[in-house]
Length: 175
Image (cartoon, rainbow, N blue to C red; front, side, top):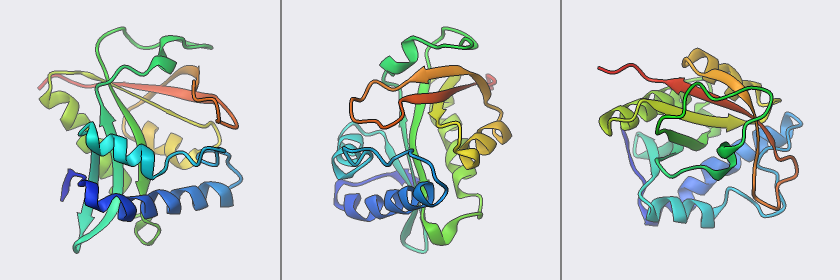
């Protein structure tokens, strides 16, 4: 079951994020290794308050998390080495993570497919995502989910070790 996250679950959700941080570090990526600890309990709490954080639950455990937002991503205003597929309204997917014990079970794909449905149910037909170039797990997932690599964006947060991100977009089919 995928549902909206609850404020009282923020610590449990943060453990899922911590698993992803450890995986990135193990693979030599600086993604989510930033000086400000992003993403962290503060980030997740803000997502919950904004009503944009969803969790995948199995056997009464939170095994995956994703933020799905209609909020404009300022870092996406300028794209380099390419261009967006269109300038239409979009949702953005952030903070996708799966609990370590559930890697390889299709949960990330399920959360991405769920993101499509959130956008479609709101009449929005575009989703944008960014990730580091060396995050091959995510870039492969995005490709399998029908996303197109549109170019490069640079994050605006000041404490990011490497601001460069690959920018992806998916145009959803109207049903």
